[in-house]
Amino acid sequence: MTHEPTHVRPSATVTPYEDGPLLLRGDFEIVTPDGEHIEAGRPTVALCRCGRSRIKPFCDGTHKLIDFRAPAGRQLPHPDPADDAEQRTAD
Amino acid sequence: MRLPEARGELSAAVIERLGSGPAAGFACLPKVTDVDPLADEDLQLTLAVCYELHYSGFDDVEDRWEWHPGLLALRADIERMFELALRELTGPQPSVGSAEIPAALTALTAEQGGPSLARYIQSHATIDQFREFVIHRSLYQLKEADPHTFAIPRLTGRAKAALIEIQIDEYGSGQLARMHAELFRTTMSCLGLDTAYGAYLDRLPAVTLAGTNMLSMFALHRRLRAALTGQLAAFEMSSSLPNSRYGNGLRRLGGDNRATQFYDEHVEADAVHEQIAAYDMCGSLVAEHPELAADVLFGAAASEALGGMASTHLLDSWAAGRSSLRPALGSADPQPQADLLAGVAA
Image (cartoon, rainbow over all chains, first blue to last red; front, side, top):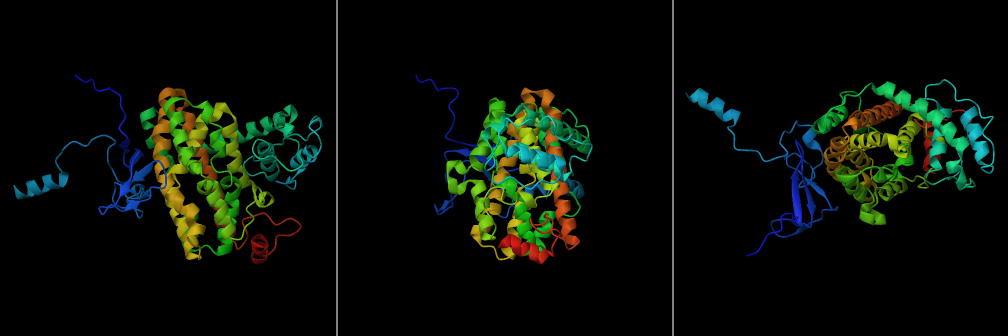
């Protein structure tokens, strides 16, 4: 029987920051779907998650201009207010 | 670097004494008078000279002056006035919990609706105005990140780890060519400017010196370590978007990739640093020391306020058709802008 160590860190971590980018740390490589290397340029990078950066896949701070909202933790499935409105209209 | 030219009685007395050995007395120094510490040329230059002894020092000035009790006492007098003025300028800060620190910092650093130096530089600045802008920034950028290194032994745990994560990037992961200060040197060189540290000290007005002096004051006093972390967070949080505009401005003016690399690098780097600074450094510091919350916000507010004053000075000077720099040495009267800048570029 093997015992898994409880605090082994994975080789890379991804951290969502509230209303901001994903920070990628550790031993990672960023590649295109064709396997082409994308130079990270630094040990820790911020990946765009608002979709509006002009230097994708990296963050350039644009999320602050568009009032981007996203939690730091995991977002649980929830009804979209737009869907609700559509449903009420249909009813 | 050479000792600067005096700008009044106090700086003249200090500069004259630094030229002799540290045995020289400080008993008959002029009193620090009742002036606006944020705007007074004599006072800010004196403070800049005092602080420079802790960084690179001056040619022909003995290193022992750094810890001379008489000079430190004078510096303390000036710092008391300077800190009070900064606290009055920014007003009392709320003592928020650690979880609210990032949001409070975001609110303090949100883009204001008023005139923006970055937008002006992106779309309108002339190449001479861009050179002036770079000269204003040079006293800090050529030692970028150095003041914050003083905070490393004064932080612990997650806050310390976060600061180090930022500093490793600032110092190019230990590769000279990638150090941010070196990237700035390259930009200066592409603009035909003198890249020697402190070469333009005599040209920098009090409003510019006040910004670097604030950093040094926060950096050299353990008591103000939280203000230093708040300043760094504010600086990083209001950096990515303006640097994108500065880089685009320089491209508009003909700057190539080598010239704009400093700005392009900061768009990407500071988008990383701002998260680390706000959440991991300032948030963790306040979680460990709740009593430091107001000082974190004070540092951020002071950084924003002085940054705003400096930007206003540049924009107002240019709107009036003047140089934003002090006249070059040896010219009794301010020269027409074109001549002045031709001298700078030479």
